[in-house]
Image (cartoon, rainbow, N blue to C red; front, side, top):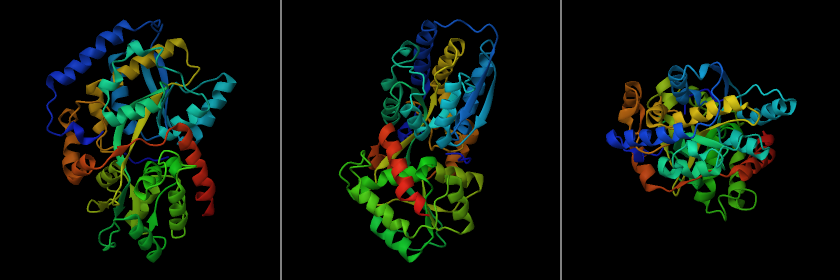
Length: 400
């Protein structure tokens, strides 16, 4: 489980909020109220939430605010955490037994995809569309692209352009690679000093892998089995010089900091947040590979099949609440998904002062230009993503 904290900077830090943000909130309110068709709970509910994406570090403040302002609906949230690869199996076992103990899920596209494959999620759209505003108008373009991938079974609650980026220790890496060819040559010359984590449980790991087809010019970057001939060849070649693949990103950050590794795969959020936390030295740098495309990443909120109608009504209310600008401003947090908000017109000036100060110190000025000047692609869709994970585990991961 990734424990360290992880939008496009089209929000522009100097954007004004005022009427636009208020207008979005106002637009939400009447539809939200008019669409309420569920019976009100006889007593405030205990809502059990599982987080398999580290998302509580962004969304917990919004969830708690919902509880504080809707005391007639929610008595408390009970939070648990777990690894994304185990989520689908856990949910299916509970659903098959008719004893669902999980009401609400915070997940990345890895856990979401596995659940979609097995039909574990409540289909919210289009059945309950009246509860929500026009999502295409609400979301940032990159976030909306990922929202469409959820096929009405989940909602993006935070988003960022992600990576692939490479993070390195400048005192140890004097010849930082800037192409896929020089990265491979560097790894060969410095065996064991380059690392990325297992893609099935690491945002930076899967973003690094999903970014390679664009850089290498593969036939179909969105078809990993039949369209990634160059990518799989590259991954197998560089695999020769990688000591092992950690199960999560946190380990790569710690090994970079302690000197076991000199270059690791990272993302904007995994660059900013660990430096804020002091896990990675503040002076460490990031680089890109020539010709790279950003691969977006997001966290989702989803409702498992099998929750009671009483809880379903409250959970739909909760999702609509999370998508309001004031709650989205919490998603800047400590840079975990840098910047973080998934909807339009939520500038950093709306964020808590702590977040604003952190962005000034640990954010990187070059990110604005990198995001503006390089294409932003969606990640793999659910089925190809699961297929990529399985092929990587089988042909790359098991070799170590």
